[in-house]
Length: 223
Image 1 (tube, rainbow, N blue to C red):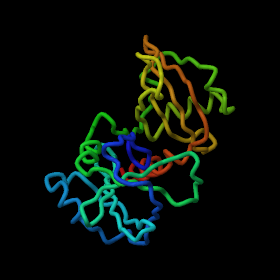
Image 2: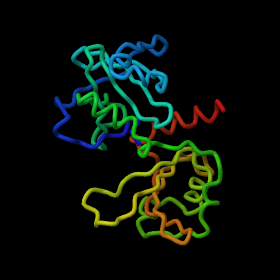
Image 3: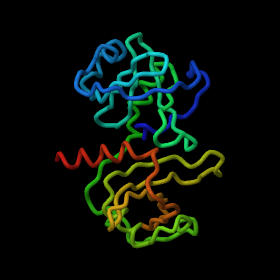
Image 4: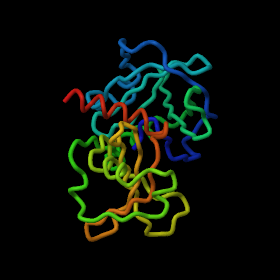
């Protein structure tokens, strides 16, 4: 999933060091020209989301793909940028953006295999059993709360195994939702076979997923 989460770093396509940027107050005047120049055949597949300004004065327009939920950040000079997420950046600090190859980014954004899924049904119905890895209790989230999030998650997507994981390691299923007290949580699990779900991680929702989660809630409220 690529909303405001970080992109895989590929040195050949990254063209500059990350630079700070923040959203402007323009939420109602979309500019479609950058997207038309890059991908005229895909314009109808995107939403214009907001405008932001880098600290060097460059203005970017954020477009989100309807299906994959992935972002394009484009300026009027034909350049493309990605949001660089890091746990070291404070939640109230300006985001960092890095220039990349536009065609590479477009193909990444259109990749449906990396898309997120907005869900509104009981996901636990897909599994007969649940297992609990020791790591699932590291952040002291109760099993009841984890079940609540998985059963009624608002956002579900997959992530690849962490870098350096042994060959054959399963991809992670990420569930984002509220527990019974209304606290937003993120839960990670892997499919363990025989319709079994093994929970490996649970904690309060981090900033890396928050924007996509807020959008999922807005999308469901509009249905």
